[in-house]
Image (cartoon, rainbow, N blue to C red; front, top):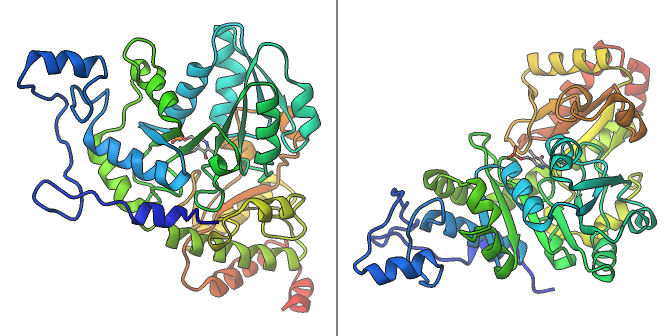
Length: 408
Ligand SMILES: *Cc1c(COP(=O)(O)O)cnc(C)c1O
């Protein structure tokens, strides 16, 4: 195993215009040419290293794209203005009217809404399946299917996709396997396991400072060229362009991703083990009780751990809300959606990030009322955080004092 995703980022060298240790930011929307012929060739995509207009491409965006491609082990990548910008352009690039998608039913709310409510307008229809059931995935494929879509670690239920298994199915039926890897950067490398296209919302762990929205599509040079084609490329024509200033700041944050992921994972595992021992219904891929624990272990780049996302079920929405408000009051984290911040973030997915999913379907997929999704922060003293969270749960009667002393 010589694939070292973090080193692949660290080993890239891009110098600035004056020998700066960071690449210069391209602060221009348009570029001049010495000859009209070169301008024409650039527009046609035949003049490597020349820039025309920053919606097409810009040096800053290319640097970030190359760093993310290095991390995922794909030929290249295209950065976008948001994760949804990456997802929607990939789907619209791969599917024409009349085509069909087989998607995991536990995916990001926005992606679910896009496939469920928006693409049917274009006569692109989706079957939502239990992605952990490979037979169900294969059974849902029709002669019009173009794509299997899933998340490596699903939102918010933390189901794990068997990427190798899905890639084999995709290959057998000549489909593209598209994997959203937002919850597990560095830990899982979907392209190495057979995914054709890997997507991230950069908004989350990769940028890690909750100060911007961004996305990326990692894939083959051919596919990225298609997305960027001036005549029929979805990224190009939908205009999901990232701003250069943002691309340069995301690139700088990316360089510390490996250290942050290790700390998110370390803290996540600590809390998950404690919560589970306290008798709370806890879901975390690093727990032996997780139904896909072995699968995750099988796929993971071990040094980055099982990630920073975990869920607990405290029985009811009222209890969940009380607990989140109290934890926020004690400065243990913020009641906020999103993830990958230095501070712990928590929310009740049923009423927030997954509210696009009808209640009945939420129930079917095990998205219960009392579920709290945690994005565990970079806390330096996670033991203290745990003790304080535990006292909140005691105070609210979620954990009885007896149970707690027994474990402690
Ligand atoms: C946040 C998120 C997205 C959407 O990304 P944006 O940057 O908000 O557009 C897609 N997939 C997953 C798994 C996410 O968590």
